[in-house]
Image 1 (cartoon, rainbow, N blue to C red):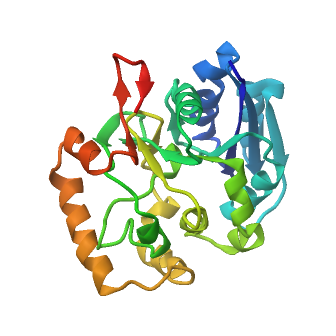
Image 2: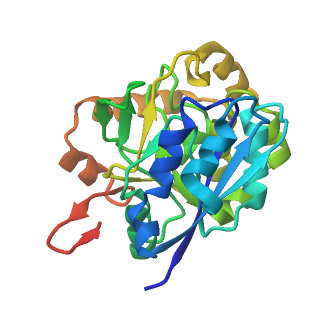
Amino acid sequence: MKVLTATVITPCRNAERLIRRTAESIMGQTAVRSGRVRLQYLVCDGASSDRTVQIVRDVCGNAAEIVSEADTSMYEALAKGFRRATGDVVSYLNAGDLYSPTALDVVADVFEQHDVEWISGMVFRHNARGQVIRVDLPYRYRRRFIRKGLYGSPILPFFITQETCFWSRRLLSLVDLDRLASYRLAGDYYLWKCFAQEAELVVVESHLGGFAYEPGQLSQTGDAYARDLATFREPIGPLDFALAQLDRLVWYFAPPPLRKRLNPRGLLRYAPAEDRWR
């Protein structure tokens, strides 16, 4: 079996309350422990003045590469990490968020079994104590809608969840990393827009990662995020509105089997009889 190499990046600054659970969830991956996946874990720290770096060292030892220097935003830190990435598959996980223990096993399965370059899992939401408070299965992410910035908007209030996304390192060649570093809030969506130039975002019905709600986090600054997004999204036309309304109905009301029938290649479900994702 081929060994998959994976790069995971955590951009952070003064995250001593949050970084331990994130680092532990990455170090505890079953695929890494079994040797199926070789991990490059990059912690890009913005010169923290608290114990963030020490906690990473306590949890990871020499298994994490730590870059600790001043930066202007989490996306500048992230761009530094992307420039250092060597894995076949790349992802990033913010301090406080968590990977499922088997996330990289599922990622390895899917990338081995299918011709994919970009995947996302089910939406898991945690409170600050790590308790799961919401679970959703995405229906589909259309490339044209990603480029137009519709996901996470009032038109389609369903976000592309960063903590469940994994992609081929090749897709980073589509990203202007200097431009990424210039964003303060919508750098994640800038990444998705760049990837959507060439790749489909395939949904996997599995628990890959979870987002933890924390007071004052960037995701709560909606208006400012929308202003950032407006600087690079493509124009929205009348046909986009009509198709988005149909998709919205499916997201809200269709059960998983119907979602699969409506999106046969873009939604992968586990087939027990075949022991594969299809």
